[in-house]
Structure formats: structure tokens, C-alpha cells
Length: 136
Ligand code: 5GP
Ligand code: ZN
Image (cartoon, rainbow, N blue to C red; front, side, top):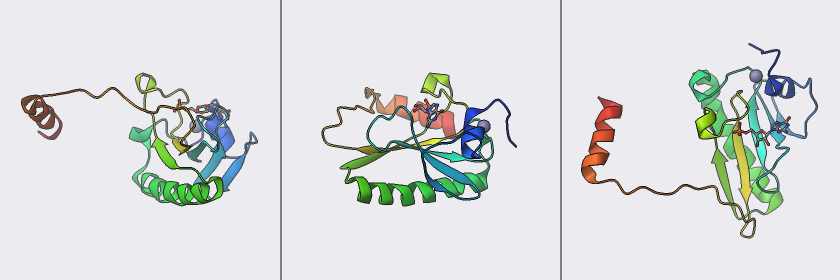
């Protein structure tokens, strides 16, 4: 499926030009226009899925394999010191473009970025309640 009003459908399918790092029948990997660090890229499936929940299993299975291949290539080429994979679902989680994408973010010792959260401090009972809520 392709959505006429979706910018990542148009980019992934080549209707809008992008700085492409990789392309195959299923995916395009492009440089992000607002990079968190040098080389920040987006792995985008060509078929429209708004988010992880909508992503077909077959595509989902291929995402991490390609992410690893790109991370190895980018780390070798850019000589970065580390690497973040980030994937946002829903506005509350920071998603601004509602076509599934995985951020590939090379990290450098001096990049000044903080891709992080404030850790909580739950009790064992609280953890157990959450575990039950998820699995039961
Ligand atoms: P999200 O916040 O949805 O996880 O990430 C959206 C990302 O897409 C942002 O990092 C933003 O910089 C990037 N982005 C938005 N529009 C475009 C575009 O037209 N071209 C490219 N290359 N990146 C875009
Ligand atoms: Zn789309």
C-alpha cells in the first residue's frame, strides 16, 4: 500500500529525491535532514505502515538485519565511537512522521547529544505487578 499524502512513501519510492545510502526492493536508507549526529540515517520500508504495530512480520524480520549491515558499514566509514537505534511510535513517543522508520544514529564521543531517559526506581512488587499486567 502507498499513501498519497505520506512524505516517506514518496521518499522511499523515489518520487522525492533523498540522500540515499542503500536501496533494495523493500527498503530505502536515507540521510536524515535534521541529524542528531553526522551520518544520522533513516531506514524506511517502501510499503506504507504507520508504525511498528502495522509493520508486516516479514518486513519487521528484515529490519534488524539491514540495520546491522548499515551500522557496520557506517561505523567503518565514519569512524564513530558508538551507535544508537531509535524507533518512535506515536506522538507521545516522539513520532513526527507516521510512516515506520528506524533511526540509525552514529555516536561520537564529542557529539554533545543525549538520547536518554530518567530512570525510575520501582520496588520488586511494582515490577511484578507490571510483569503480570503484560503477560497475564
Ligand atoms: P520521528 O520523530 O518521526 O521518529 O523522526 C522523523 C525524522 O524524519 C526526523 O529525524 C526528521 O529530521 C526526519 N525528516 C522529516 N522529514 C524529512 C524529509 O523530508 N527528509 C529527510 N531526509 N528526513 C526527514
Ligand atoms: Zn507512507
